[in-house]
Length: 329
Image (cartoon, rainbow, N blue to C red; front, side, top):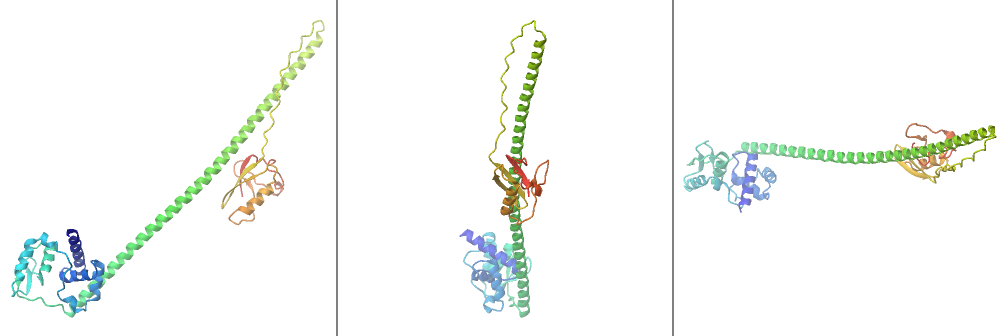
């Protein structure tokens, strides 16, 4: 069909561009037929059969009508009429004075150069000499080496592109993991800050109530002294004291949530407020992934503090790490 014919002629044109315009088209078609239509395989087949006499005889072309018949029907008809004469030993292109053995060679030449003037010639084209065969062999060998080098270079470029893409993907995953860890640390810090603010507000409210009670008691004492100096006047009944609101009991926590940042990644764990700091040190020593056995614990946010040996026996509540805190190790 037409699609197959176009593919066949394109393969012939590519092969002839590799071998040179003087290479017979029927032999190029024969090489393509032997290699299944693959241009590189056809060139390798010719390279392997340069000394084969069958290569230098007229071989049957591939199954398909050449598209040159559609592109230059007048050339095909003229070349056919010229070749029908038994006295004609070759065909001559009057535009460039090149000689051809067969009609197919003329058609391929006309398709490549758009030359239209062909005539018969009684001069026979001489077969290739050993030196010409050797030159053609070297030319084809050099071309094959060039094609192989270009193919290897293209494969290397594709390999490097795939490696860059893989590294970029890995870097993106690492950046996403670090961003998530930083977000988790920031949220933990903000939660601890809100807890401290609530505790401070509660303490301020209790202190205000205590000061208000002190002022009321002082006013009652001053009023009682003034009533004792004026005996003639009946003492006014004491004003009913407003009930003193009992100060709110401090909030009691049953657990302490700690996040310890190490070089191998953060470690999150829960402890009792009464646990000593030594329990946290032992837990980090067992669970950290970098294998470090000697380290110091300290707070991660200002005011920063590094705990010493004397702090290991202190409880987490005494060190101000309840209800949550972020440490470094």
